[in-house]
Length: 408
Image 1 (tube, rainbow, N blue to C red):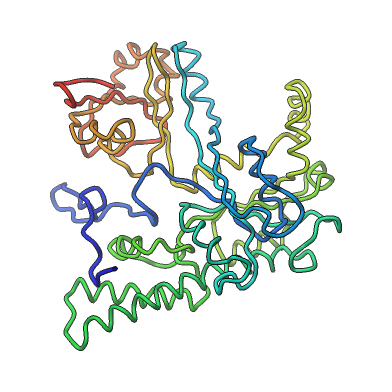
Image 2: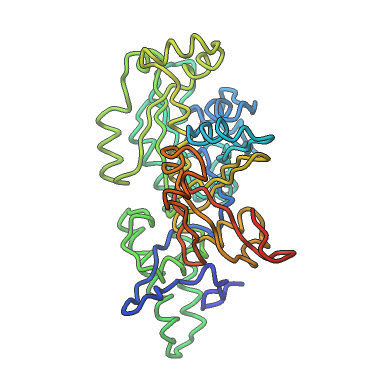
């Protein structure tokens, strides 16, 4: 049972204040669960190409037959995130083992209008969306009468609006119920300042959703985001729009189109829109490397790497690397994470017993050619607990877990 006051958060979840003299600013706060093991879900109406796209991303065969709700249980796969920096490090260190960063992708069955009220197994599917941290919103723009459209005809912006509205309806029901429960708990008593903030945050969320705005596009204070994060709201999750177009259109270099681009800019400004053809991608994947390179040179290569990276960025993830003769590994950590949190991704005890981290950037390594040369150039730095990890950092974690001054 949820209390009126938000549950006590761990130190890593609390709003952190700057310790520098004269400053009292809260650090960047993100919607979502404060963890690094995050995932993105493929969401859309039935028969828009979600499962076909999932098959392409993970090479994992799930049901993709032409009828609604063929995907009842969500399938999950881990997709390698292509990174030229990782390839360069492997070439330099020639390690015994190499481990790339991965993107966890979940295939979620198609939603229909009325899902928020339970239509089409809607409650089950919406709960699956709640388990992921970001959304690949797949919308159909490819023609073809052989593939049934659940709404009867092809209208991508209508389809986009249907999914968005269902997520907002579910969120509105959640925060409305929470506000009603909390108001009843007070029973005329004067709320504390903390409780006032919680009640105001819920009302603000209700107003935002009633205006037709997604939670992630509201104007929020850090403490409000921390509070609302406990509700795991669907419209707080970042979205990447994947527009599944026809093979002919993709070969001709056509993209999502002005109408879809305008809809996204009006309703969810700034979020990426990627046009691709699931049918073309399937054929492309069966070609040998030489033919793939030939088509890529002509400008009709695969859009899958772009899709993977867009999902990775939507999850607010960055890479840091650990390197050596035994292993070169890319690790994922959320943006704005500090060095101890990065250490915790490697091993929980490393975060608890963190001492410091030797850090240098990939760009400096590439420029100077070796760690020794980086150090000689004064580019290797020793950082403490307040260091914010940057994308492309190469890190050596010092800790005393199981002994003094051990290094990873």
